[in-house]
Image (cartoon, rainbow, N blue to C red; front, side):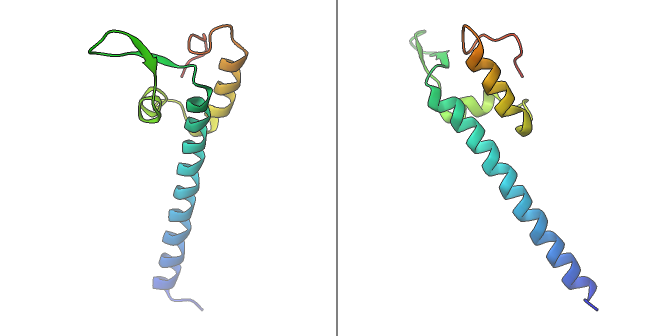
Length: 89
């Protein structure tokens, strides 16, 4: 029989690996949006449009749950304007 300490260590390791997997899935989803090179934001200083970087996309998509990133990407891809879809997060 395993000691309680070993059980808790195994459980903590499992939770840590699960959290790392979710994080990598989220990063992959955000990378998919970044790779389209179709999301522009207005620069604060010059007031001109420029491509959003990955960190800015992560902020834009912060309220979109990880499992919903792929379906949301598909909906944006099918829309006439990629960054102006009706079903935003």
